[in-house]
Length: 378
Image (cartoon, rainbow, N blue to C red; front, side, top):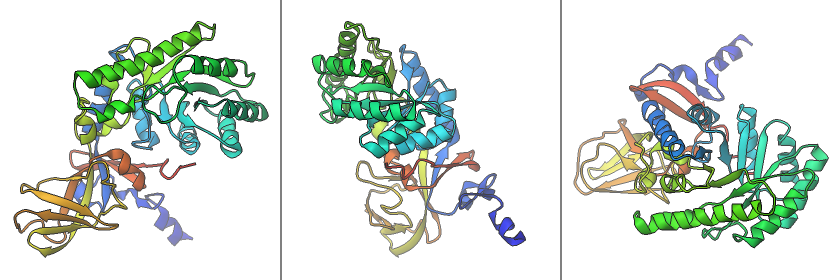
């Protein structure tokens, strides 16, 4: 018994918290590391840019899946968070986050029952775009004795989910407003089609057009005597424009807090904060470096990681457990056993693969945050 207690001491789950207070160089690898100073500057910058445009901030938590980071965003001015799944909402609610938008359709008896029961513990809103889904949400809420908020997803050009702007949305709003066990809260959209456009006037115009379409739909619903509290749009790739569109009440920009190259290239005013620490495990040739991190550690499909400290041209290839860096010119370093650190290309495709994020300040591990909502796909 004493031995078992001693073995468990200093652990969060299965990770030793004895890393806290130690240099980042002592971490076992691969490890996802966040520069706390940069993270806090990014959170402050995004909050200032959004609130300064007269808009509310509801950051999407899919990038970090960490309640600790969500609470930092709320402390900086966010009024709540957005998630994609009921399972994620359950995790954040259990960790003290109250205002949660599930920016997705929740369909089927199991999920709608869980959603309705969760409303005993948090003020949850859910997106809809189908009358049958409204009816099953109403039935689940009645059985649970709760009244979830509901927002209508509007397709403003993304061509994913959502009803068409205008009459279709108005008719669905009327149905929701007539439900005794649901609270109609507003409308939402994601102008994600603009992400594929080059930054510039045409892209900005498309963001404005899409957001105005959403605002006009909200006005059409209000004209029917139905209050619209939430008009939710925007992600990190568009928030600098969408947050300034009159009538948009909140934006869901969240991933930018990591300062990914994906978002910096789209104009987000953030700095790199998230990195992946690996170990060089093989140097089979002077022009090849092999590290202990592959696709099970980081998904390179949208943007590959960027190795720090490599000055020659290179290409990267990832298999399941190995990362290979092919150099245009041979070099002696790193040697086997040396650390190789990468900037994460796109945080959404990295953090969810890890159980913990190590928060580092001035080269020292200050905190270890569980990625508590990882794997919550239902």
